[in-house]
Image (cartoon, rainbow, N blue to C red; front, side, top):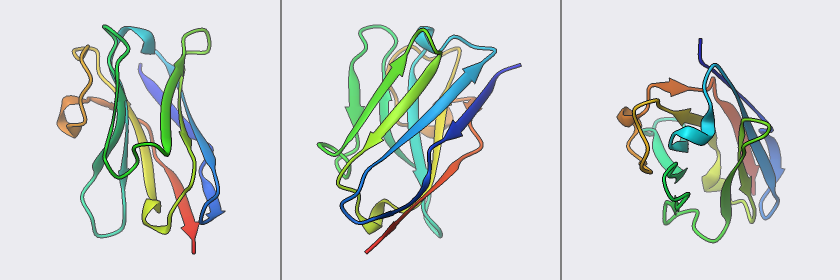
Length: 125
């Protein structure tokens, strides 16, 4: 059984930083593409960042480029999202995702079958 468990969300002031973690069980994250998505109230889920499992290339949405960094720790089977210079518009529930059939990076939500439960990030102005 695949489980993704996120942690690290919280309330932070504008300009602050947070690091989200996503610990996996039942699946080896290093073998597959991984991604972070977010969903703000009243908005659709959007892709934030992803890593390919083939060449470990990373991709970021324009809205977070230069501020967020995605990574994974093979030994801990955990993925991370380091978020710096946070803005109020980054407020959302953040989800990690992966899929056994996906090797290349993708920010399309329906490419992923396995999702974490979500962690709330709130950035105050």
